[in-house]
Length: 331
Image (cartoon, rainbow, N blue to C red; front, side, top):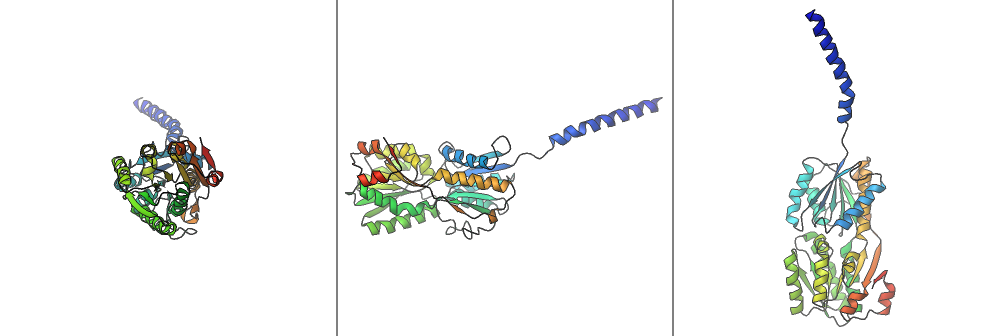
């Protein structure tokens, strides 16, 4: 009798386990892919670009929280933290790394040769060794470049038109991003020689540095300045625009968001559109394409934005030709 009882128990347990198998299979289905988003800026400061990146992802059918997860890592303006943050993303092996900015891209490349990387940068990715060529990037990395440093000459020309009395100018650069700093400085110095203006290169990498920079510009009798393309400067755009107004210092910036924050004017490509394109590339890689088969894209949407209210505050008359050329006038 005991044998029959044990047999019945065995059959019952077997049938119970069989019934549980489909549930276990459902629980153990592959989890959604994880994208690592690495930036040197603050996440709050970079929110518009992160939103543009997610838009690009959605264009390829991936929505955060639904069928893709995003792990955000921010160096909070301290580029020396990027290698450790990149390693954090590599250890659990995210599916793709989205590297926001040149320092982030270099840190991600140094961290892995296996995980696909999609960068968005304002400098020449070939010149700084990110890729072998734009058409054939090779390896595990590709992305989008807006070549923002090449815009410095045009920005200085516009400043000269708006402030013709400014014979001394400055360019603000971040020394903790050497690749970007070097290319920006080289282009700016060449442009200054061509325009016949004296140029100072001023460094800032912390919020407290910025106060000192403006005091230095007063001492050097700088008449106008350019803010170089850098994630740290973008995250501090409100502070920079406020200081420029306080010190009555005309400035030109590389993206519209500075002018919207009260900066005098901006000229450059749409950085947000570059991040959207990077999001599209990440989505294509998630669908099986290889980074080496995706040529580096160049963002080509240029825009001149002038804040007329700020110009009035600074006592500047915007030339008719310059205002007519503007894509947007903020009043």
